[in-house]
Length: 451
Image 1: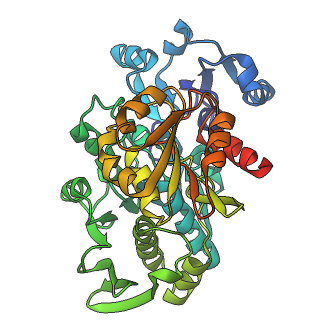
Image 2 (image 1 turned 30 degrees about the vertical axis):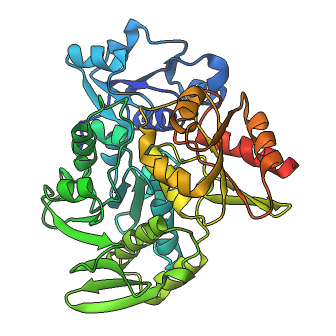
């Protein structure tokens, strides 16, 4: 264990959902005196609260009382912002504040592979897990991907691998977290509302993924992204680039429409890009990053090639739902920023009817203007940011507002013609109408399947 001695320590966990519940149980099992606090009402946390009661973990709901500050350590869930009053007050009182990821890493005996980036994290993390699984290498896939690291960390043996999707919010409160391999896929504008509209602050948050790495560790990074290149230049470890635009030394790249890796002057052609199951040039980048991790983990080229041919992507990320009357419907609910919508639009040559909007995160929609002109025949504006979407695109393409997902899909399907794409790619958070992006995507899919 690399962290503090937990036994008998008073620990407050902020957030009682998936990650908070996981780390509360973990720390309780290690002898800490855990108190959990959440702003949500009890009816939204029934499963967690029942588990806490059965294990003797104290908890409160409907807000944070002074009790949360009677601790030595505060652990926060990924959804709790650094500027939340409860976090700021804890720091003012001199309480140590760490993320669930950091706390879980204290108990990790295996080597860790950590993936971050503004876009592509879930796809790449899942693909790495599939590459390792197909090669029969023992591992877990966890982190920001759905399974909290704290829920599975004690299952890991020294010879296993932990594959972790890591967000900037988790990294903000890491101290000793040290992956064997870190991956930065890209650093593009996202979460500007949480980083005071500063790309410098956002990039610095991403850079924390390698802050504890040494010359025995590795950073894999995109050479196609300006902020990523600038950030990788500060890494204290071995760095390995990948690129879809240029050949790189000791890394991965695209050459003559094929994925290629090159190490110590030896090249390996993985497979042609048209044989990769997941669509779009952004997924070539994800495949390159995952391939490099696979090589470093000792997976053969033949095994990686087979996985890339068969991997169908992840739910809610450019997920094909159904074709109705020659119109194809795609669920890209995980596209919660402007750049991810750009990647989605580039993946199609057909006319697109785009469902766009939600809880805005400081989006600059001007970066989508050219792509919308080239690819989109109609924008259906949804959610809290519908008026901003109308203002941003109303002068260049037909835009209509919808007051529900059902209304949006009904309008889109009525105007769609055979050969069109109806694409939910919102560029926004989901918390205006939905519990999370999964909920948003599932509602969309259910409605599509009723058409």
